[in-house]
Image (tube, rainbow, N blue to C red; front, side, top):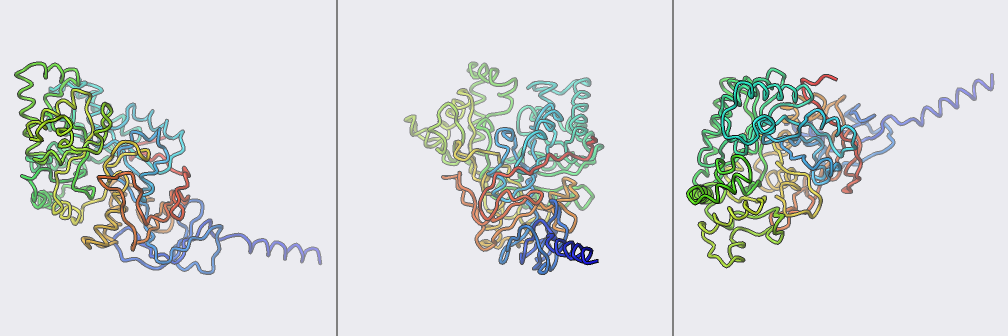
Length: 524
């Protein structure tokens, strides 16, 4: 009998030493991600899942984080992310340090191919955060038609539709277009509608780099809305902005167009980065027709005096009226493989270095010279604060970086690659008071999660996956600037992906708990 009693007491004592949770986050101001005001609460996490939210004072855990004075939020979901370097930069440090726990790649009509094979390869890697992908219209069109400036034949359209269906069945969340870029710029709306219908029938959504974001912005928005209506597909006006001084203020009209479309049942949303400058190839200043067929054909046209004169005239027009901002100082080089000393400098600077008067005419000649040398990436300072503010304030706007994975110190990137989400929290919420903190968090979490159809992410509730950000709302801010972009933000204290800390008390841990996410039509 004495032996039985001793055994019972031993079992009882050992059971008291078993922790209730793997991790408890104590005393944080918990934002659920749905736009509600925060509540002071503890969060218990077990096996990567949120298992309880409430008063856990009498509970124990293997690890405890004191979040007193901190905001506890769902992990941020970046709906527009350039993940091309993911296999070389799987830790994704410049993104996760912003609080991003899930990123959607394949924007602007790009993306991987073969689609399923690429995702299968990623699943064999250790990733710093969760990733999903869109199937790209430009990628599919190029697979079938190369860079031809024409409509597809019936057989070619059928093949493109088959490739969209293949991408969707292999895990794409939808279809993206880059109608400003090659070869998407050569497509007519009927082609895009047909391909979008395929994605819609398989549960996907449509995200579009509009055909025009400058002088013809209103028609660009109208085209996207028409595609949404006729293809019966939810849409996102991605990195929505107003480019070029002649159009500043037009966000009043574009947002009215969004509201009107939604009022008649067209599911239109927006994503946006919080800066007044864009980033893309210098070739965006060159007329699209001049690039048909690729770089060799561009060189051939530049060797024809008549065509070269037309190309120069179109480039000059774009410098004055579009992304050039009518000022050579507004075009800033970011990555120039053939002359790296230009990185961070402007077209104005380059003109001076060449001994040229910094006129827009000479600027056009330098743009063409840059493309003849192999092209370059550039930052275009051609937007206005009032449009950025107005778009951000719209209830259907989500925050997305349009950022790219980058190794620290490589070239001269746009600061959004390091600072998008902290900039909204610090500058637009705390300093400008443009939107509330709960509104900002909603734009970063539940809204993009709902657009992607992620049922277990984007909201802090029991039984959801523990993708969580803990930040200091009194100090959080971006530090990356256009002059010094390689700077991590301040105030993002903890970032957890599936309950594993990839940022722990301000320290990047290089843990790799990320998952490859697959879209609605995927079946194992």
